[in-house]
Image 1: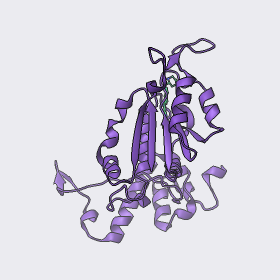
Image 2 (image 1 turned 180 degrees about the vertical axis):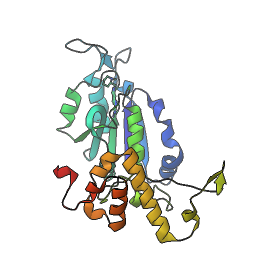
Image 3 (image 1 turned 60 degrees about the vertical axis):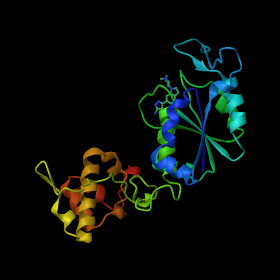
Image 4 (image 1 turned 90 degrees about the horizontal axis):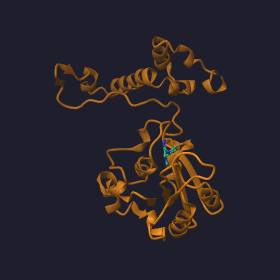
Length: 262
Ligand code: JD8
């Protein structure tokens, strides 16, 4: 899988050669290209921004350098990904969708954003995905691209070591229930007078699996009740229903009730 990134801050992407992604690139599973937008700004000052039509604060990125850059970097089978706070939410499902593409090109905006005619133009050329990584405001698209590249890359077969598998990822699409991860422990068995839960040292895989599921439910109920509201009651067994009732969320376990159908 090939990733190309166009940005006025290429130095943001040196981490791409580190850790997981670096190893995957060495194995030829992934390849990265990072391009400085200013290479396609041909005036003496390599200008990439100008004042907004209609007035208002800040500057807007000029269309011409983006047109020149994207014409050079895009190929017919590329998908163009544009981080923007006004974009569609980037989720595990979207990461899975993008991981099936042979080539992703990321356009990193800065200032108040990229002249809107650029994406309007490329929607007639390639698939364009305007995506947001969350409801908070960043100064530009670069860190959002790092988030997306890591989330997508780890779904590419062979990138994760065999110890790790994406099948039990939280938020994995198609899972009947989306629960957040429960607590994790490793040696020593006691740390600052805090013990590792005994069940985890029992070797009883059935009890361990059930304990982990219960803890995931408790943590999801405490920190992400919105996820429990999307739960499919058919994914629950008798023990789950008893736990949800204990957590005061018994109504979520009622078959035929589905949060989405209000
Ligand atoms: C791209 C320019 C800054 C945004 C004026 C601050 C994503 N979840 C997210 N939050 N913010 C971004 C994001 C912000 C960006 C750009 C992504 C390009 N800015 C602008 C509009 C208001 N400044 C993002 N993904």
